[in-house]
Amino acid sequence: MATAVLAVQGAFAEHEAKLAELGETCVELRQAADLTQPFDRLVLPGGESTTQGKLLDELGMLEPLRERIAGGMPVLATCAGLILLASRLDAHDDKGTPRLGTMDVLVRRNAYGRQLGSFHTELELAGAGIVPATFIRAPFVMETGAGVQTLATCDGNVVAVRQGNQLGLAFHPELDDSPRIHELFLSL
Image 1 (cartoon, rainbow, N blue to C red):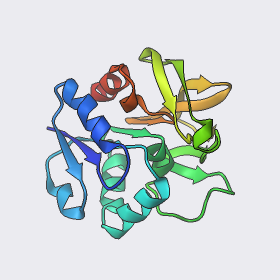
Image 2: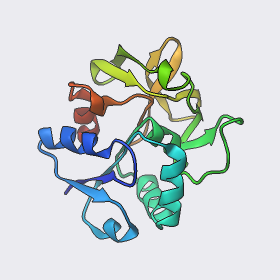
Image 3: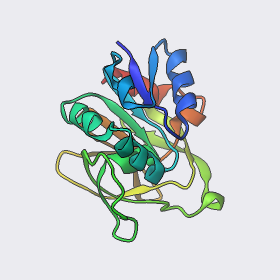
Image 4: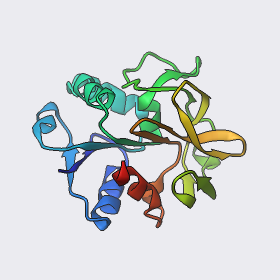
């Protein structure tokens, strides 16, 4: 089949390029009609989570994607994508913006500050080894629920999690050279 990449806003082209390097076919989701294309996995890219959530809702894609994810479809969510998957947001972040809410985590948006707080590091990620990690206005996970596995931390903060076939990362693996995280995703 193929991997669908949410292409309404954010760093979707970079994910598509990384997946193409691994031989994966990608389809873009820009409107509800695109959901009829054959795909068996999903990428939720970094970008602006509020905008992405509103567009998913307005374009009629929120509920169908929620159902597919809840049904076990593998999903890779990076930065804003992690926020879209979160069942809960920190109280000062939660403005009631639509999100998928399929991962049992509490997330803080912009946890590392504004754009000037962006940074690059390397992390030990369970299942992938040492990986480069680029954080841009990144969130982090404040709490995990039952069934959520912590895959990586940075400075004591949870920055990568897995629940079933859902991978949620606070950073942008599509911006670095390593294919390890996308390979992990494709192995689900």
